[in-house]
Every structure is written in structure tokens, then in C-alpha cells.
Length: 100
Image (cartoon, rainbow, N blue to C red; front, side, top):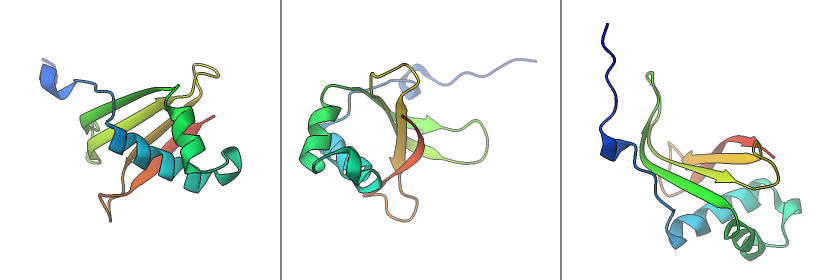
């Protein structure tokens, strides 16, 4: 049984654009308003985090395909937030996993 691996360009990880970081900050602040003073404070915190953007992420079963953002907060190796575009509105992000 042979296994098929994704093409290299499908596995490429990018640093998100400033626009992406702003959208990530807006989403995180909306879901955790008591953690930050405002969206700008959240965005500032994100500038010190490790954030990866997988523009062509695809699940291994029928499910999601598209950009995926992973924020590693740095408090511990398992302190992460995973976001992807909202299915109903691609201009909005939603948190699909959070462990802070």
C-alpha cells in the first residue's frame, strides 16, 4: 500500500500578513475580551507570539480545506489558538481550538 504525500508547495508555512494579524486580534479579542484592554492590545501581544499560516491546509477526511492560522502564545508549548475562516463569511475568522 503506497502513501500519497501533499506537494511541497501545499505544506508551505507563512508568517501571516499585517491584515491577517489584525483579523486574528479582532477574533481573539471578541472571544476573550477580559484578557486584553482592547483589540490593539491583543494585536500587540500577537506581535510577540509565533504565528503560522498554512494557506492550503486540508483535513485528512471530508471536512475543511483552506487557510489555517496557529498562534503559539509562548507561555507553554501547549498554549495555542487555532483559527480558520468562518464557513458562512470568509472575511471573518473563527477559533476552532484553543488551549491557553
